[in-house]
Length: 505
Image (tube, rainbow, N blue to C red; front, side, top):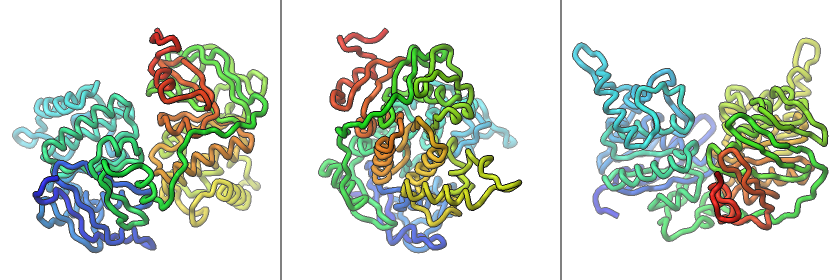
């Protein structure tokens, strides 16, 4: 470490919201040229601390130092002027504007009379996008980009200023493996320039790949700092949640019932081809593959969001036609989507109304919805899934990521499905809540549900699944039982390498 003043130092930061002491005297520092990971469960205070740093919240007590100089930052623009850049987990882009306009929003280059210098704007933004190895130009409209490419635009913003400290809040949540490599190269480049990096992520493998030190928050309090090279995942986890986690592979024998779902030679245009598999009641089948392998597209087809071009879907031995989500639900298929905040929840509604939303028409008493029936359903799934919320009136947007995910699962369980599909069940969820979701998935299988889990995390899919289906470029490459799967043969399968060592055509 360097002996100069820290790039960033926070001292005794206190922040209180009505009824909640979000930060309780937190001290934290980042050296120039250091990647410092900040970990903690959802609700531990990480995001609040970073919003204080970025000028979005004002601390009730405490001091902030940049390069040894005490500063007060009342707005994000003031923070940026001090060299502090926050790359949000939740995208904050103007979708109707171009990538270039988003990258330089608030500081567009100007010509005489205040007109935007578009030539300079496009040249500067294009250079940044090229540095990030993005496959799109500066003139593209952000609303037309994928979530992963929108994240790259968000990251590009950090490269427009002479930053002293850059905060990455879950930066890889929407990125492909190739994009992660580019991101890590950019972080190492910033590090070599002496920039202090704060890296927030729930993905332990990333933390141990990219960070120099790890600091942990729990319940709004600072719990300690560890040197990454001298610690391990179990020690960090215990510091975060006060206990160890069982993340070993699933060796629990499945109590298989009848075949709940059978898919025969299903195709959907160029998205996936000749997909055939079965799922029994009481079984968890995991789908694993690289981004673009077709996993989510299969789920969307089973749920009626896409129309198959050929093939058959059978439920409990009977072929069915699924033309819409309504017909999927009527046939007993439910989907917990990948993006719970945009596709699975209404964040401004309360917990009860989110859980009962798909069945409001069945809960009417005359012209009105029956409050008693709705509350009974909410109470049942709150207890069944151990949802942590003061009461049904709590807005879903105020819950932790893990409890939000349980609300989505509860919503679809309340429809009594034969088959439950869960796409990226723990995306953006802390390690403690992740363990709860894994346990919940296994419990649902024990209760007789047929469960499909789609995950881009190898430890997760190996931990919860009875069988794993490996996909590559829209095709099923191999199918493994939990006993025969290894990391090596799973990686080979999702890379298109078949059993004899040849690569798939």
